[in-house]
Length: 128
Image (cartoon, rainbow, N blue to C red; front, top):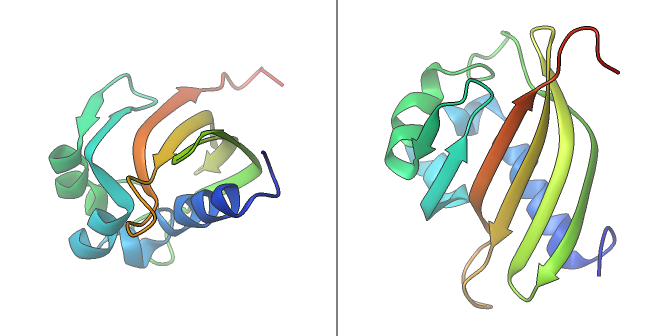
C-alpha cells in the first residue's frame, strides 16, 4: 500500500499537525503526536529524544504565530508493515530547504499514529 491508504493519509495529517504553531507550542498536543521512544536527527546533526523535543519545540522554527512556518512539499508515503508508515518530503522555512524522512507507528488499532523517528537533511542553496 502507498499514497492512497488510510494509514498513509493519517501519518501525513499527523506530520502536518506537528508543523502547526498551536501544536508546536503545546507540550500536551505535541506529546500526543510523538512516540514515547521518538528520536530525531535534525538538520543541524543534533540528536533529539522525546523529552528533548517536547522541551525545545516551542522555541524552534515554526512555533511563532506570524513567524516563519514550515512549508512542506511533495509529501509521499508508504505503508512498510502493519503499523509502520514511512513519509518523505521537503520543507522550506525562512528560506532554508531540507529533505525530510519520518517513520510513524501505531502500536495497535486502539492507539493513535505517532512519529517514531525523524531525519532532516539540509539542502545546499545551489542544489535542485
